[in-house]
Length: 90
Image (cartoon, rainbow, N blue to C red):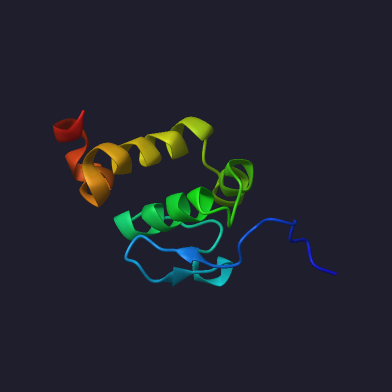
């Protein structure tokens, strides 16, 4: 039996334009959040692969942290996700 809910996609467009599935997402408990991993999680939520709640639980994120990633991508593209450049983009 599958835990997939009706209306959910199995594949979404990744941040680099390639197909993204649940198997392609970072492993739960990721220690280092590089730009690509953050962007993949945001793309998965936007595309319906994961819900916001599932993503936050899977990766032990706060909703505010995830929304910050999403807002950074919207305003500054992938470069906005750089931890070392946070002050420049605020």
